[in-house]
Structures are given as C-alpha cells and as structure tokens.
Image 1 (tube, rainbow, N blue to C red):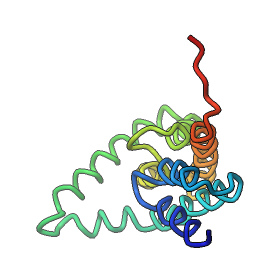
Image 2 (cartoon, rainbow, N blue to C red; image 1 turned 180 degrees about the vertical axis):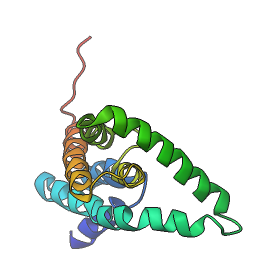
Image 3 (cartoon, rainbow, N blue to C red; image 1 turned 90 degrees about the horizontal axis):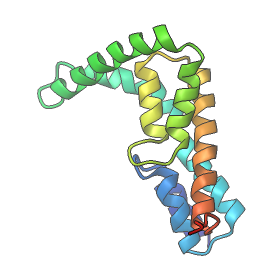
Image 4 (cartoon, rainbow, N blue to C red; image 1 turned 180 degrees about the horizontal axis):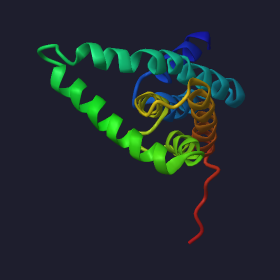
Length: 155
C-alpha cells in the first residue's frame, strides 16, 4: 500500500494532472479516502512555493534564449498586461478569482497554472499560497466526491 501512496503523491505533483488525476487513481486502487485525500493535497501543494518563487525568474532568464525566448517573452508580456488590468479592477476579487480558478477542477486549471498566473500578476506570496491551498482543498473535495460517486443526477 505504501507504494501506491507514493504513486498518487507523485501523480498529484504532475502539472495539468495534479490531484484531479491522482484522486480518481487512488480510488481506483481502493486506497483509504482520508489518507489518499491528504497525500494528494500535500503532493499538489509541494511545488507551489517553487513555482511562485522561480517561474518569473525562469521566464526572464529565458527571454533571450534561442529556443524558448519567444514563448518566455509572450508569457511575461501577456501576464504583465493582464496583471495591471486585473489589479486595477480586482483588489480582493483577485484572491477569490484565483481560489475559484484553482478550486474548480477543469482541464488547464489547478495549482501549477494558478500559481504561475499569480506570480505573473505580482500577487503577494502569502495571498497566493492561501488562495491556492483553499482552491486545492476545494478541488480535492470535488474530485473525491465524484470518485466516490456522491454526485447523482436526477432525471
């Protein structure tokens, strides 16, 4: 069982898959619900500080590199423009938007993408981590409920 917990821990760290994939895998492996949920949350949150602290630096470093320069420049410029617009309009709403972006388990949303966006928007580290952890908890709850079949649709 330890080997299976290690698998879901690492699956929850993979960008774009994250706990949205790890939780259904854990339930497919018939692992205990609470332990699986906690392991997936920790695995999903582990990269967040590193993404926040180093993503912008990597993009700035990569701006003048041959193969990655254009994409790095694109992300920095697009993120900078969007960040200025959102922060002038958003205020507290930016925190809620990040929380919902991470918390609603759709393809392309999650802790990796949300943290990268927050770093490009110059959100504070504390607000980013809090919004992302709340979003990950919400997404984990939704995915666990879905994996356990708690969502039923009445015809």
